[in-house]
Image 1 (tube, rainbow, N blue to C red):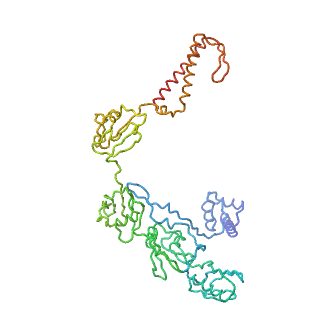
Image 2 (image 1 turned 30 degrees about the horizontal axis):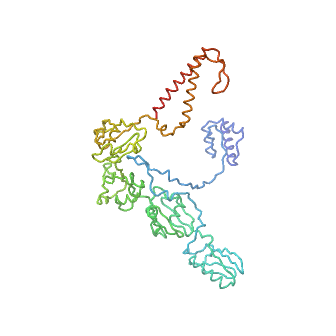
Image 3 (image 1 turned 60 degrees about the vertical axis):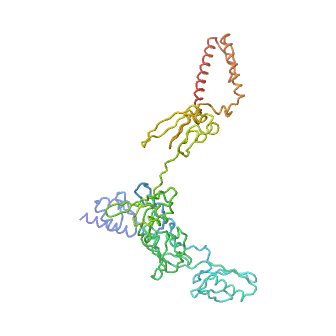
Length: 534
């Protein structure tokens, strides 16, 4: 009985808490915690109170209900990738969808030029400026009857007139009825109308647009088309009938805006799902996933992809086709006009390969030459046909006594190495040193290890500076010889610091001289090694 009364009390507690959205007191929470977990959850569920996510059995405050709001985010077409599993392993995007992708908006754009053939209607605004005898400005809206009411002139009918005709009508009325006044007539804000965008739209629904909005502008305002939607069969319906069909490929690839017509109030844009798609990859200008329309030949598909690149191998274009038995591979020769009519089907993967870029009729020259690189091979050519002059074709550091020809002798790329006297081959064309070359031979020319910069006067030290150092070294050597004979003086002047240095004994002087000579020997050794690096 006591437990029953406790449950009744807690029920009243939760009823009161839920009704007035109050937080339970500490005493109430203490009583609630004494109940088993199952009873806690039952009471909380019964009275619409959520337990805290932490599992502490505390009752969360019930918040007032907030209706959900519709958030329109910007579509990122870059995240739409479809993997293609074949040689390239690349990810290709569906073609054309990024043109219409953007941030959806339901706010029409007013600050755009108004064409002269714009048809006036109820809700449009006309701005009239009068100057001269009378200075005034009027913002007049076209009424439901299609008229504007200009003070002192009365109503003027503009319904069904183009903007150009309406401007002429207002100008004539003002000039005829108000003497000494000139006018400037422009278009104000445009009337709004509602259109519907349905189907495979990024944000389907009803949109408020102005009367000069075209099909593509409405699609952009709705955030674009899903990748599952068709870009080649966008239908404009008016009163249940298809008025026109827009093929976005005509607009994107050819700039054809003939079917990008203006919308009218109540129009519906229907985007059906795309049906036939193929993949084009390889040596084409625009590798992508394309949507097919009607019957498409291989040549027409290559044109959609922008044509082939200059290094495309047209003699063997591969088409992979899914069948009930697996993937069927077909090879098509696009250099044959008859083969260009090859019919493409839904799901085909077209791969245009590149030509072989391996050198076939060339020889290479490497090393200490003025112009390294490849040269055209001509049957019967010799070394002096490639390197014709010592002065103009070779560097100053070239070793004229030794060079190599490396030649491949079989398909396994095994090589043989031929040695020859480069100088003799150039000076005496008929000598045996002037080797006859074969296709893909490589001539290697080596360095003679001479410092060419020194002989050209490009070193950091000039000849005068070198002479001064040579003289200084001779004087220093003479002084050292005298010290070895006579002994070290008690004081010496340091060459670096200019300070006086005391020397205690002749033995120390000999040790100092010996150490310095050893250091100079090491420096000369490294100097000789550096000479071989040039």
